[in-house]
Image 1 (cartoon, helix red, strand yellow):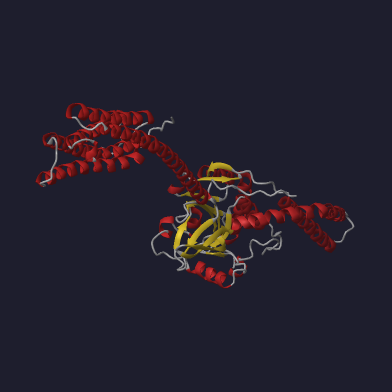
Image 2 (image 1 turned 180 degrees about the horizontal axis):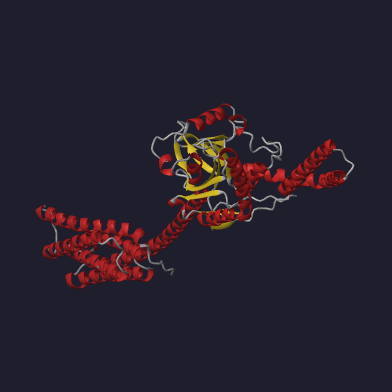
Length: 540
């Protein structure tokens, strides 16, 4: 015979509580029946004292047991349950005996007790309870036949009842085992669903793509960390009841609803924030039409495009560099020989210098383009930005002792950790620092530069400002300073700032120009979260 395992406390405790209510109610009903039968003229209780005494004792025991079960929300041990069931059998057999035997009808109550035993206790103990109930019924019938000359049919009825008790016990045990297996399977599936939900939530929260679930009224229902960061707010603020999307996103969403096939251009949600590319997907749910909003930091998309652009540029420059540099070298060499000639007129010397200067400038352009196209993939390292900047400022002071290098580190940024390629970062800062010192010297007569490290209050990520004392960049040229070959100087190549931004984008650092408060120029580097991974693309 199969054995049922011990039941889970929280699954069988509810049934035990129901059975405890049943026992207490049964005891009170037995007392009420005694009162009603005693008042009836047809009352035929053989032993009223035994009946009443048993019913009162049983009522006290069951009510006390009920309070104990309610006060202690746990499933009792098998031996405690067995004792409780034996008490039930004893009381019911005594009531049956006091009311005239099996023919009185009270013996049927044993079916409920045996069925409860098959549910609450392990298989062998449940069978033992059925055996005890059957033997008790048989013994009571034999006692009536021997002592009170009852009909021999009482014994046969008791035997039939005993068989039914055993059959019901085995049947309920089978059903209980199947029910337990079904509950175990359902619990396992529920755990899997919960784990899958937690995993999905973890994945969504760790995604660098911002995700927003918006209802038909443009109210935010669900969001993740990346969405809050890109929107420049907190998840708590996004999840606030009745909080709607920013106006700019609502406009983009309405445009998409009118024309879902239209590709929307990226835009900034705030002046000092990144450009964000939005895309939308419609969802149908029980609560009505909802929309999934995907917000992607456009700098990552631009980074991938930049990698492809660099790969194409590398192939192009590799194919033409040799063809350009060979004749350029011949031109430069011939011009140098002309400059050394003693028969060259003085006016022609100036023309030769122009040729040599432009050849050198052309060579610098080629070197810059080759450096850009050959740029190695970033190799990010985790470092404390404040300590690294202190070392970089020391190097600047050593190379330019006459320059005024002012390093300012906000207290909240002292422990700021970033994941960057230190070689690329040094190359970018050297280029920006040289430009700043040069323009400060022209404007004030003294080379000066301020390196200011702080933490963005909205994103909590470090930002680095390089501020000079120059005249700043004209508004008309501010949008073009990062374009390749754009320069306001006759001797510049126009690739310095372009190369700096390309190196920053390769490391997912946002480089932008800001107008300084004192009319100087300010170049800001906004660093990504140190846990963000850099996207790499091979030149091929």
